[in-house]
Length: 219
Ligand SMILES: N[C@@H](CCC(=O)N[C@@H](CS)C(=O)NCC(=O)O)C(=O)O
Image (cartoon, rainbow, N blue to C red; front, side, top):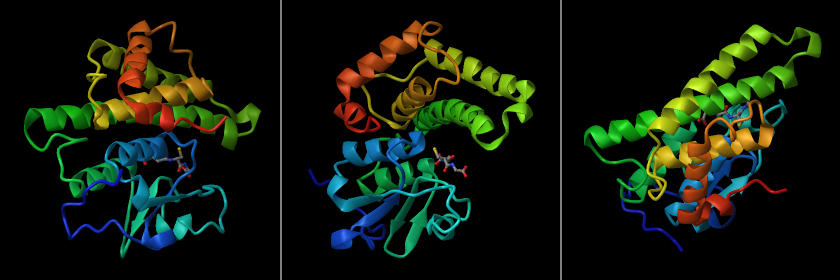
């Protein structure tokens, strides 16, 4: 399905095959998955080519595209957008607006805050993973790891108490699903036994939103 692009000032074209825009992302990045899910939900799959990036490779052009060297990074004709929050907002806007992020009012800011909370859980999980990846084993700081675990604990507790509606695919539910998927994969903490409400939430979201299974990392 090809989604309608309603704002001519926001083109979804670029240097990809067939003039498509380019998304630099791996198929394993939780933030990249947010964007891939949004693309699918908005019916924009045919308009964006996903090109992998190696964030650790100095010679990868990613560092010219996003000075921070982070994925996801969306390149349209003439403009480059990051990070995942901006890209979701961009895609939602050009698809007409109000589908992933409510247009106005408290709902808009509630959705954005919940999305940031779930992203913050992912950030903390990622920092725990990076602690193992970028430091020698003897350098690992338990104090730092505990600090991140605290964010995950409090974030998941808050999200379990007041989760987004799993039957509604928006920025909040997308962020939460991607965060839980990343925790399942990397397991910086074991969450399923501690937050059963989120286990049920993820199952309900998976049942309601086909893009969830569709964007799972390749195994
Ligand atoms: N806030 C950013 C986070 C992006 C991010 O940290 N992506 C990771 C991959 S999952 C990355 O590029 N890491 C490489 C690095 O930090 O150098 C977003 O929402 O897009």
